[in-house]
Image (tube, rainbow, N blue to C red; front, side, top):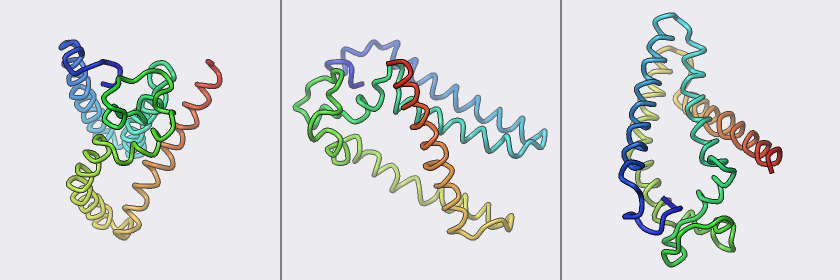
Length: 165
């Protein structure tokens, strides 16, 4: 979305392909997890969702050409509607402005609505299995998502960038 000058410049097939890949990847993840569950491969089940987070973070940080973080940090609303160019996400103010951008505000609202029921259901499930307290379950989930998945994605994106630069 940051590469095109306007929304009308994005080819309709690209918008459809993006939506289709989101849906098909969700279906694939569900059925992969179901198959692993039926075969009692519980550890692989957990690695499946963690692999999804890892891939999402890696794509955000590296992208398809090593400029993923640059694109991610750029919000045209913060820079008078000017389309993204290489290096624009690293210009002065871009990295901090992203926290106040329309993209960030949308993510904050989504998190405010979606995270409480998600955390409640996850911790309820873990507590019913008598594995964790509520705080322990949420802490474990956040550790896996942000330390393990994000950390590994950041490390590999950095190594990939250095290796192929």
